[in-house]
Length: 175
Image 1 (tube, rainbow, N blue to C red):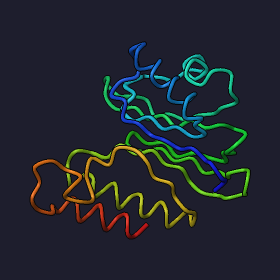
Image 2: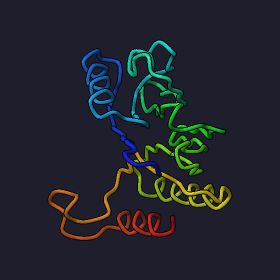
Image 3: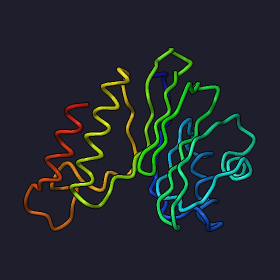
Image 4: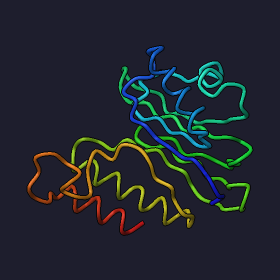
């Protein structure tokens, strides 16, 4: 990817409050983000007005998955001068945008995920994303809330590797 590309994601746990919107605006501006994903927006819809408020007058595009009953919600946004989207796939737990980074014509899928808390449901999601990648035949950039860790030191008061940790490790290795 192009030199200096800035990509970030954040589990915001609700984007409704003005203070959180200001924090997102500041983050986008100060970090000069090109691509930004939000997890758990808790928004029923995302409008052009919302996006202009977050990004200012920049040329951007986005896809989102609406929150259901005030829970969940995903948002992926990007500078259109940096990334050109071709298509998108949207579910309640993950969204992926297929496209090309313009600077070096690198084609890939950028995905924001919000993995379930339940280990069995997470494994099902990993398997779905494995199949998705296999069908695409493109590199994936995965970001979001995986609701699991890869290493013991990433979790407080943990003394043994769990099944979920092994499954996430296998998923990452497979991709």
